Length: 493
Image (cartoon, rainbow, N blue to C red):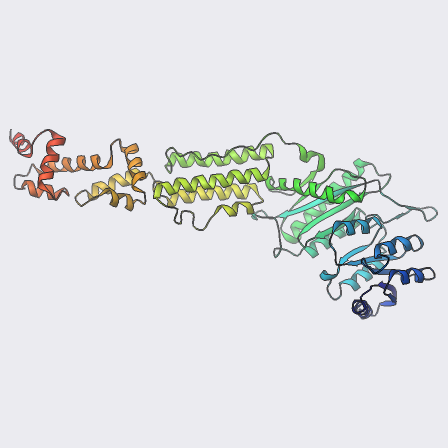
């Protein structure tokens, strides 16, 4: 029978905890349940227990102070802290005291506490806690403090995931249990689940262990970890290890700096182990990603734009550019492409079919962001007029419809361009403006029709799309240098 002592100042919680434990498989007996740490201290002067469960915040002496006071005389007793607080300060202090379990009340399921008690009792917990004294071979002596610590920050991502794994994608409680079991094998330290979706690990290098030996242990651990995670969750593993540090009081600072460096997983597509000092090696500033507008949406422009995106990410990977800056360049590129397309069609309506720049921030994979930008470029090429050597289509359209009332407004609308942009685009590619080209085409057709003496001037004008015969006569004289009559006489000569 496992004997447990509970210290909890809320009566209903104390009673509920007692009933819950004693109702679990009949293997646990709550020998005492105290309201205050002072009562528990008096009890432990004469008695002991297998497991002590205490709240942190109590009316008088805190639960952590209670553990600190009773621990030296009850080294075999396992300890569980129940708390409503997630702050690092409490967790850190608990780790320094060698607490076996730090559990948040609002996260506990019905049987979780009972299972934790059973697990601690059955496994003995020797060597598992971060600062658990390690029993020596002689005289029941314990080493009170390890030589050094290393913090690890974990990121998981599938090969087709744009983002790191988050809520709803996997069970982080199961994941943390798997990691903890792997850490237990080598007595490496403790795994922590923060805010339900962040996992970090604190590794303890035991006193007397050479750093080379410990580094090898961490590499072996990572190999087992990445293999298990891929088998269980089909995810790649990215583990970022800090440099060595001396005390657990440094955990908050080390955690933040290591988490910041963990953004470098952005550049890696396979499982990877990152070591602290190597993370600082960066060879250059973030490259620039610019959109050229010369010859926009032609085949040559599209090919060159694809190469520009690919070269940008190649350089970003090479120098391990700051991920925030890389995404900022991608946002600017998105805006530039959107503006270029908008100028082409005279509006931004549905150019990129529901895509927007806010999607860019979601990418935690360089490969996926690169693929997304290339798809964006391809979509623009396919959806925006001009992407398929549009000038040839415009020319063919004019030749097919010159006999009709063909205005600049009509043609630019057919090809989804604003009139100013259409005029600029047409003049650039044809060498003349739209009206000059249309009039030249019509007069050329008129010359062919005037060879038929049966057709009157009015009929020829109407056939080429000019409803006013007088305008046709003036235009013909202006472009050919001859009147209609003089031209017909020259055909008879």
